Image (cartoon, rainbow over all chains, first blue to last red; front, side):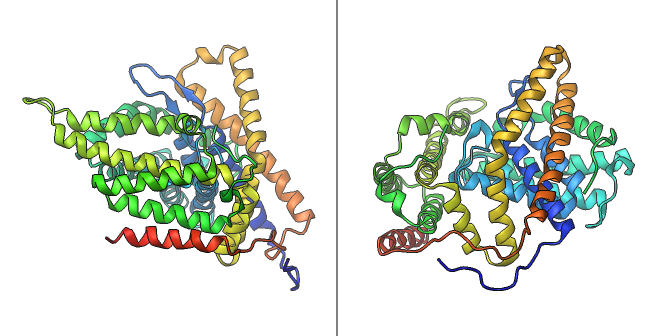
Amino acid sequence: MATEQGDVDLVDGDVVHAFARAALLATLLGAVAPIAIPIPFSPAPITLQVLFVFLAGLLLGPLWGTVSILLYLAAGAIGLPVFAGMAGGLGVLVGDSAGYLWSYPLAAGLIGLLVHRGTDLRDPAEVSTPLVVVALVTATVLIYGMGVGYMAWLLELELWEAITVGALPFIPGEVLKIAAAVAIVESGRIDTV
Amino acid sequence: MLTYEPGETVVHDLDPRSKLAVQIGFAATALAHTAPRALLGLSVVTAVVLALARVPVVRTLYAYRFALVILALGPLVAAATLGPPWIDLEAGLATALASYRVLLILLVSAAYVRTTPVRESRAAIQRTVPGKPGQLLGIGVALVFRFLPVVQSDLRTIRDASAARLGTERSARERATTIGLLGLSRTFDRADRLSLALRARCFSWNPTLPALAFARRDAPTLGVAVALLLTAFL
């Protein structure tokens, strides 16, 4: 076995801090996969993954928020049971829900850029609520756009058919998640990096 | 649940990188073709892979049940039309064939999941993705593996405590906020302790990796991977 012979190249303290948070947020994203909360007037219960995608962008910023979601996708790709229904495997990342999964890192990055205006993090509790809501709505549109678009292409569905299967049942839940994400960041109980 | 299980099969002995290559080649060619003849060929490849890796098919299908619901729903939605003749068989069949190839891709990736321990996948990531991004990706994946049961148990505690206080009677928004807030604060507390522990142990960019080597038995597997990839262009 080849042993590393060079000098130890230590990782900077603030990188370790941000990285540890990104890795554990990725874990949390995987751990909430089986949790489903039923909501009235909708056949689809809400799952909390998109809520934590929002929070990754809001609390970790564009860089580490994206890293966090990429770690989540990589962990799922090698088979950890982190995707919906506690499934894993590279196949899921090209399967019917792949569009949604690949949109998550972009959505977290987009939210981070809109809310923090760069890689220096601001306290999201001090950012105006309308801006946070606009960022989250834009991210939701991106997630469903990519998710539905890929599903329509992959399964050779008409666009409206894919929207019926892959977006309409989930819209009430998305509104709730945006409200929950705003309530969480405005509570000021979570520090940013 | 679909997960790694130790075993003696040929597929267990292969280098994880050649197994990843086969999956990528298979997915590429499956995404490029939906003709019945191509799907027949891909089905044979899938059957061989599943047999070699001794994957329990029923349990695997159950593990992917969420995807299967969409894959089953797709053809029905595609076939349904508003107005006469109400059912468009041709569109339904096209979607059914497209759905079937997704099922094959999922089954082939299940063979990887079942035969590859996380530490080997981690080593494969760190050796394939160059530089610092590769390091962070590899270590990050290992951390997710290590902390997944811990965070799951945190979430269980939060939900049990909330249910004991009639939290299940609250509105969905309040429940989501509670789980989000408490889950996040516990997780970030863990992350901050972890980061202190990592620095105390000289967390570095250049640690010594677990051993990983291509052997002669990997050559045919890599050949299959390249062949599958090339058929995507047929």
